[in-house]
Image (cartoon, rainbow, N blue to C red; front, side, top):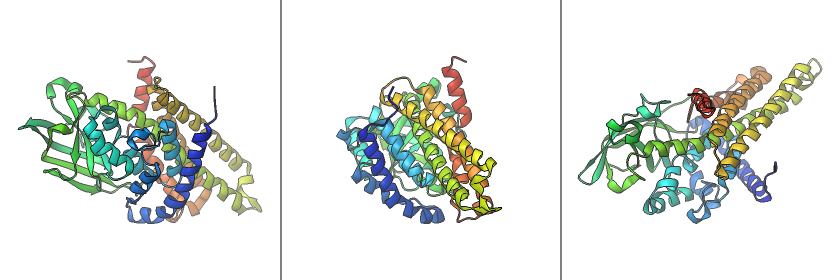
Length: 379
């Protein structure tokens, strides 16, 4: 068993850590204040190979696999969960199905520009009446005169306000259940496509939208893979995405812990730093231990993914546990900061708000428990 990153992975980690410190950290305050995503990061990261880093080099990726993707997500999330969310969608759910199931033409027209940051993607699955129950989507796609016509609404769509295309799930045959769901690529200028912005209290730089399809017409060739296989493609995409989400929670927990440790060592009460009070020292020790445990679970799941070994259970475990650790660590970090943690300028309150994303998006904690129980053979 090898518990070390390779030298190449270590070098990649240092490079992305340096990039995040230089290029992302200075953007966070303004992005939080304006609740806006710094879209110029897409081409900048794409040029350096940090955007969609896990994809093969033949498409413009860095070829660092899921482990490299997790390294990248963790380092960006250390500075901003909101900015990380937009990057994650681009490198995961907005491109994964095209990479795995798309035609050569789709890969050249969408995947390659997305990896370079020249096109920005989004993923349209969640609907007002279909969240955890992804099979209950109501958006439809009907073939008419050699084109597909979509009708329906998607909501909580990350990157939806500024994306160039949306990978969209729609029902093509209501009589077949999940086998009647297909995946399509909808361009931003498709007739009948519109979007409106939603506002969140957390992960503010992550721009989120509601998308509307009203007799939205797209070319027949924009179907991804086989008609009726969309639900299976979605599940493939979400499984890998859980590992990336887990690394996002890991980066957030690490940032909150570092801030709490620094503050506790500097804040003096009753004649000594508050870190020296036994309860606080034990609290910090517990936080450090849980972060370390989460790290191994996350990177083990990523390793399984890269080795093409079964990883459904481990991906769900990693997402669930890492998000729970982030909850506990950010709560403790806020408590350690006391009143200073409550002011708007404090990073502690941002960490506390942002952790809520981890237990809800791309599969709630309850869904992860359901997945794990089923993988244990409980039906």
